[in-house]
Length: 432
Image (cartoon, rainbow, N blue to C red; front, top):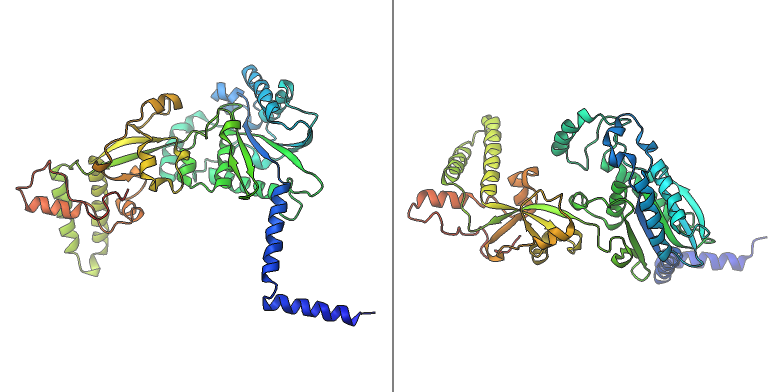
């Protein structure tokens, strides 16, 4: 039999919910629920790359042996045992540990060698093998003859989006590792790390270099450009994520990572100097194209107008390059977001030139040489990958930074070609 008083109280409660009288209470419950969720999560998450594999030593193996079946070398086993000693120092003395690993043979062997090196197997409550954190699929077998073609196509498509035949793109892997994070952190008590009856103190993930970068990209909301700047960890190197309960987030703990630094990241850029003038013939050619474009007012010459627009854009990019010098920004992840807007931080990390991939971080730090900030017009972060018009949009500029200069120089021959050009926006000369 229905109790009239209980029914009345329930209707009164529902009415208050509908009217908003209980909004603060509802928000308080939601806030407390988030606090409880984060208290449940492990204090640390360690992302560890596998030890040296056969494929790391002999790339030709990819032509005859499936990527998932590649094993560790003897050196790779030694690396994993040494990593086991390091992880033992991070492991809780009595708390529970969960291990998440890729199903590939080299990650399985890495985990076993971690145990052999001293990593506390007794405290491992669960080993979760998950294909979502496997290596990026590069095709069933990797034909070495495709390498040059693939590299060329990657440049045109973009490495993050490029998909080889019978393979995945990095974007595909990003999607599945995002689902993996969701599986861990599911807030209904059914996540691997959020089950109310099981509190893990440490989560160790044994996976792959590219996969780790994409997992960090997802967790820290990196842009595609930032992801592309980050280098793979070395074999059996790891990144430690430490829980910040108050902020409800994980943060990279440099002191507990190996090596003790942020993941190494470098980004190539072109520094455009206000002291450099493009060749006069290029400026005159641009002025001629601009005048020809302005003369096309008839709708019937749309194709010709498009052709001129493309020619102007290409020439303006060439002029930009003529006024620029190549630099590499090192330790890119250490720059606060939004990174491309942090002028002082960027300048303090500039190394002249491109193509420094063979140098160690220590060598790169010794090569830092910042140019005079007063001589910098802006930083071209995109090079050949973006049109001139696109760069101006990214820099919040209107029109071109060359047109006024080119016309004024062609009509004012008394002006010295070595004289620094006027800036398009003199009120904001540091708009980098």
